[in-house]
Image (cartoon, rainbow, N blue to C red; front, top):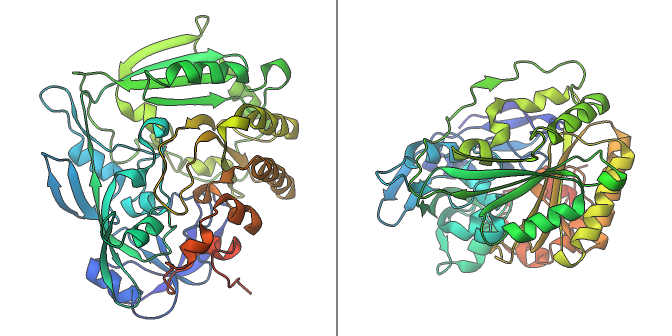
Length: 450
C-alpha cells in the first residue's frame, strides 16, 4: 500500500507535522501494513489533544476507513464492529428509542462522540458517570488484535487476559485493534432529566457532589478558573439521570455549525475569558437553578455542537490539562490548583471538575483512579503556559495523582512513571512496530528522537 507525506495535528493544534501516512481500506490491508516492516503510530479521528497519536516525520496508519459494523445482538446488547467506527455512528444506528422510550446506549461516553472505538479503548476514556460505571474498557468484551509478527489474537478477560489488560488504555502500543466487541447498555429512557445549580465557591461543589452521588448518574461541574478569594472555585454543577419512558433521538453524526477558519489571533484571551466566565456563571438567573428534560446530546457532548472549535484558539493552538488526585487530599489540592491558575491569569472557558468513583479500570495504563479530576484548556502563550503546566504537574504528583495522556503535551517522564506504576509490566506487551511521540517523550519506549 502506498504512503505519502500528509500533515497531521494534535486536536489542540500545538503540534503539527508531516507524517508518512497510509489509510488501509480493509482489516486485511491494515494487518499487511503493520506486518510490512518499519515503525508507525496508529491514528483514529484525531481528537487526542496532545501527541499520543502522532509520530512527526515517521509512519502513521489512519484507521478511519475501518468503519464497518459486524454484528449486533438485540437481546444482549453485544456489538462487534471495526476499530474505526466512531461513537457517533453507534449512537446514530443503535440508540434509537423503542416503544417504551428506552433503548440501547453506550455505557460510557466521553466529552465527544467523534472518536473511534479503537481510540476509546486505547485511551480508556471516561464520562460523567465514571463514579457509577467506570471507564470505557470496563464494557469491552474482547478485541481482535494483530501484531507485527503476524499473530492475530482474540483478547478478552479469559483469552490472553494479560494482553487484553495491556491493550485497554494501552495508547495503541500493544498491536493493531482490527475489531472490538462492546456490551451496550439498555436504559429505561433515552431522555435525560438535567439539573444545573449555581454554586459560590469550591466547598459548595463538594457538598453538591456528595448529595448527588447516589441519585444522579451523570455529574460534573463547570468552574470559573479566574475567580479568586471568597469566590475561588465558583461554578455551575450539572447532574443528570435517565427518565423512564422518555424518548429522544440520537444526536446528529456531524455538527450543524462549524468554525470555518483559524483567526490570525486567538479569540480566547484574558478579556474574552473573563467576560464569558462572568456571564456564564450568571446564566441561571436569580434562582440559580434550572431543571429540564431533553436529549442526552447537549448534556454529554456540549463541545460537539460546533465543528472545528479549536480554531478559535488561533494558529498557536492550546494545551489541554487533565489530572486526578486521590479523594483524601482532593479538596485541598483542587483548591491549590485553582489558586495557581487564577494567579496566572491563564485558562479558558472550558473547565470541568468531577469525581471518579471506586470502579477500578482494568487497563495497566488506564487514567481513571478514585479521586477528583480537573480538566481545562490553556491558550498557548509559549513559555508562560509551559511554566504554569509544570507547576500544576508538580502539585498533582506531590499529591499522588496522575495526568491523562490523551490530553497531555508536556508531562515529564518521571511524572508518568510515578503516576502509572504498572509501566514496567506494560512494556512486556509493546509491539516493536508501534511508536508515538508521546511514548518516546515520557519514556514508555526507551529510544528518544534525535
